[in-house]
Image (tube, rainbow, N blue to C red; front, side, top):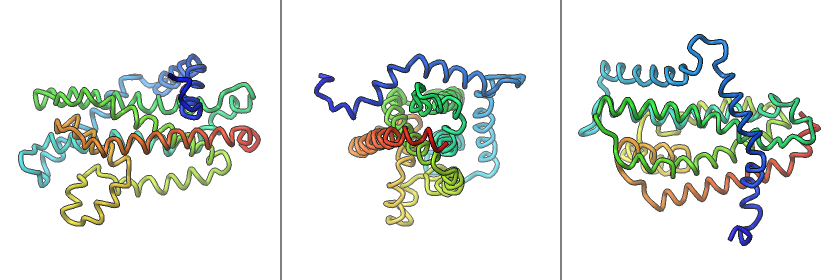
Length: 274
C-alpha cells in the first residue's frame, strides 16, 4: 500500500524515522537544559501556565467582563487560556525558526548531519510544553467545573495536523532565515499583530455579529481555526464542522509538504551561507 503513495508525501516521515534516535536524544537534551540552573527545574513548565490561568481567573472575577448567556468567569478565563496555548505555541516557533540553523551551525556544517531534523526537535519541544499547559487546563477545569467534555478525547485528531502545519512553517522559516537574519526581525514585527487578528480574547462569531466581512477575513487565519476547534472540543463539548476540519487538515498537510520541499531544495546551499 505504501508503495503506491508518491515518495514526496512520505519522504519527511521516512527521514524522521531513520533519524528517530537522533531526534529523541536532541529533544531530551533540550527539555532538560531549558530549566537547568533553576531551583524548581521542570516544575516551572507547570507553574508558568498555572500562574497565568489563575491570574486570568482572578482578574475577570474582579472586572466582570460581558459574558455570554450561561458562561461563567472560569469559562471565559479557560477560553482565553486555550487560545493562548495555541498562539504561544505558534509564536514561539515563528520567533525561533529563522535562527534555528544559526543556533546549530556547528552541527549543520557537518555534511553528515541531517539538518532537517532540527525542525522536528524544535517542534516536538514546543508541543511538549504546550501539552503540559493543556494538562494544567484539564486539572483546572476538573477542579472548577467538576467535569470535562467527552469530546476532549478527540483533541489528538486536531493536534496532529497542527503539528504538521507548524513543522512546515518551521522548515520554511529555517531556510529563509539561513539566507538573511531579517526574517527574524520580520517575524518579531508580524507575530504581535497576528495576535489581534487571532480569536484569543474573542470568538469569530462575535466579530461576525459586528462585521461579516471581517469575520470572513479572520477565517483565513488557520491558527484561529485551530483555536476555535480546540475550544469546541475541550471547553464547549461541541464537534467542529467536518468540512472546516477537513479543510484545515488539507491546508496543514500542504504546508507541511511544501515547507519540507522548500527546505530540502536549498539544503545544500544553506550550509555555505550560514
